[in-house]
Image (cartoon, rainbow, N blue to C red; front, side):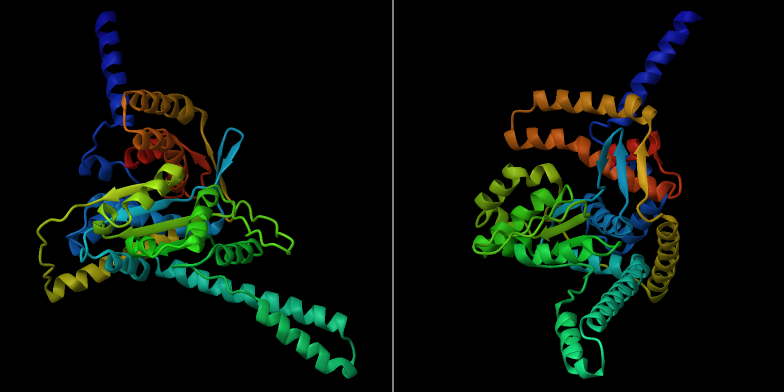
Length: 392
């Protein structure tokens, strides 16, 4: 009896270990080990976007999900270490596979309520800034005789108000910092960078673009630095601001024109921050649907949008999701040991550094998954972490 019990316990532990750290998870493993709402979104969208692989679709969906959830300025706590649960996605797909259509469909059909929420909050923020300027103007230029100066001051200061935008698609270090500074003045939103033709962007690179891309390294940890300009006082860095990134592209240029520059970006830290997914060229399937199928897709997407909105509405502003002791001891420590072993067995330098980064990616993703699984319970439990590890 005792021997049988020990054998069963040993087998159970082995199964648990392999479940926590699947060596080569197939699509079904991944789908079965993610928040239900994400699984349902992926399941529906795979019916329409039939030429896009699961890994690329999920990587885009995670970037958009992080954009929404970090707009509530959530954080995660690992004992005494506070992290921003943001997400960097790099997606390589063949030309014509439907990258833009998929992203636009996510925005339009799943995250539309969030985007309306953001638009409303941005309008409120701008109105508040204008009211502050009017009050300052009234204090600075009181009385009817100073009406012209007061109005001139209001007009000049209103021009300086920088709108908070839901996403940026290009820019400079100065523009990136200015957007970050605007977000630091309000209590909502996150910086979201989307470059839809990343290969072409890198092909026409210059010093200004290189400086802009270098900003993304520190921004992963919530820090956006101002540009040092001769003769001017340097402005303070913006800190603790969520920044999410979605870069996607046809991969043709990365085999030739921009290969060297991209490898340099990866080696200097982008591979440790971004989750990179790839799908190769395959025979395209014709996306032919009946009128009824299109109607059903639209109706199902609307129901999913309502569920996403309900989850988002329950996420508390500035909520901090704490990693549980059990999740740390029983799961994270095993994962760290597994990654260390995998790192030691790997020869490729760029891959070695990426392997060690998976722990942080999984931790950040576990906080997002906790939001989706139980938005008001501020604990990252074993299930949240196992799901995140499986996805990564």
